[in-house]
Length: 68
Image (tube, rainbow, N blue to C red; front, side, top):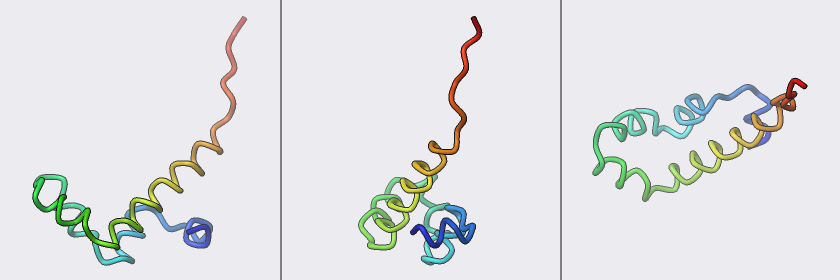
């Protein structure tokens, strides 16, 4: 995952790499498609990468500065 992140893979690119990009789009409108997708190993990898990317992006945020 770290290699994919450093290579500049977005979450959408990673979904294309796993071959589930069309399924992810279809899952936005159909709950049955979402349930079927969530049972696959590829979705578990996708969800793990999504969580990894969100954690890395949280680290990049500057600290909050409150005015006095």
